[in-house]
Length: 524
Image 1 (tube, rainbow, N blue to C red):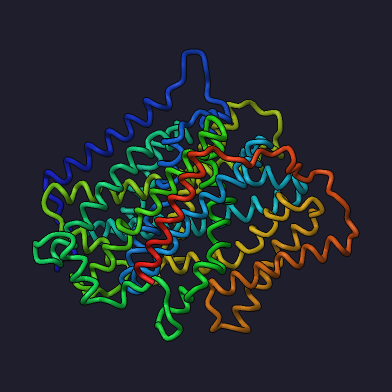
Image 2: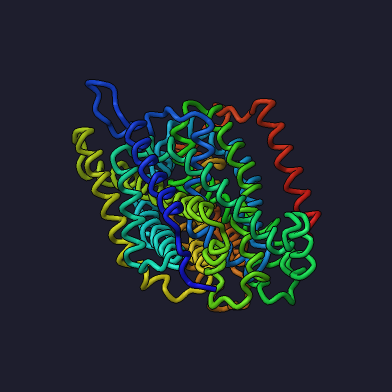
């Protein structure tokens, strides 16, 4: 199989039209009425004007990027359908976030996660976590998206990795730097449509090839018959990849902690819901995103599993998705390639905007208060650009030697997420939680994770996350008892929060849960 995708003139033309159209639409939706300049609320939170469909689409577009498409397809190739637990469990997590976390954020008019920590605890907690998140977003998230995105472009077209990263970064800057979150969120509906359409077409053609032209159903049956081990959702202890997805723990253990951290307390994800027109509109967007998450394994995992039969001799699992793109007919290749690039640049735009938001609102404005709104927006744009350049420089040294980058990202973030989830949950739902207790949870998470990693290296990282999370709940409680602290002066008044949700939201919750249960029963 040739390394290069050999895009035709039709494919290239289709892709270039998509690029030009997206940039033009981004500038059109970002325009301001006469006499009005963008202020920080417009740039970082889209002026709290996003409708539910933009919220839901933007959540998925921010989430589904190179690390999901390339990384999860690679894990699908190596592990199988079990890796879809990250997608399917995220659907039910979104429902929880919409019902229990979003009402608190809206009631307290939260713009950023560090802002919540400062209002609930103190400036020390805010600054500590803000610096941590900036480091993770630049040196883990941005680098992974750029590196895996460039790998996809390289495998598909033969373009050098460096030039691929420069192209992806320049594209994301061209459509997102001027308009900020509004440009990103309102164009994300286009990105998601292209992503889903291209992904479904790719999966269809792969399955049809496996079924020898007899259709998708025949392809699925053939794939399940010839690669049965790839369709086990719950891995047994003797499975070679049990350490990555340790059996029942994906349903009741540390994966909940990972998902709650990502979907509930992660700035570049939750920022979309905070920009919604209202709480109800944000919750509608979350249910829309939950249904899309149930669909995602068809787009990101199935091509990787199909590659087990169609390209069994790959050098690296992360080459599975780009290699499957080579099977596409002329014209469709351009659409699938556009879908892949859409996922990459939408995540880059989302991440750089959130980096700029945290830096400008939570750190820079404290150092230089009282500056003009125009100044803060300008600083945000320069920070976005600087973050991209830094990620490009660091991408190869950090990720160049990993076969399954998605698993690496999950394990690295797993060192810190138990403490983050613990301090947020305690801050929201326990009135006695103090700033010192929150700092102990944050620091304790890294210390305990490292200790378990060194002392019990055979312990699966998802199980380690669950155990460390329990420790990160116990340690702050002991600190509060030692401090003899009463109710914190900044505690959340839960009696003043409306947790009741609409009938439609509750119906969607039941629907998502039943679909999820059906998936696990089918492929247990």
